[in-house]
Image (cartoon, rainbow, N blue to C red; front, side, top):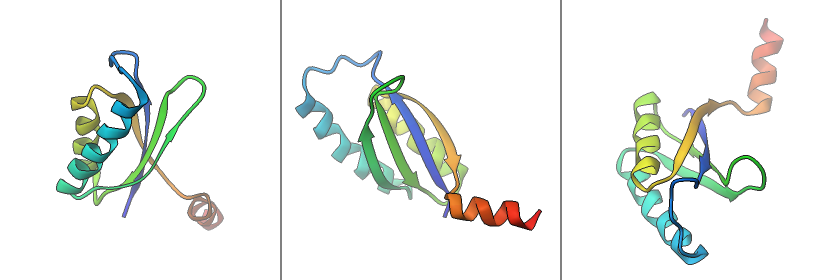
Length: 95
């Protein structure tokens, strides 16, 4: 199953407190599951982006739906497919 990562920015979201953010992660996880995606990890980040979200879904359609779920919750992000480094090494070795 493909793995995806989203770099999330809170620039347009008016977050009142950290508790509010904790609440929406549960809602997001439920909505991801409704369209076949599994939210694996979410991290708060220092630097250019505020959060990193890692999830799996069957295909690009599920990834698009997941990205739209984040957008619906006011979380702007950049979603990309990612590959485990060991798997990537195997691909490179085959070339």
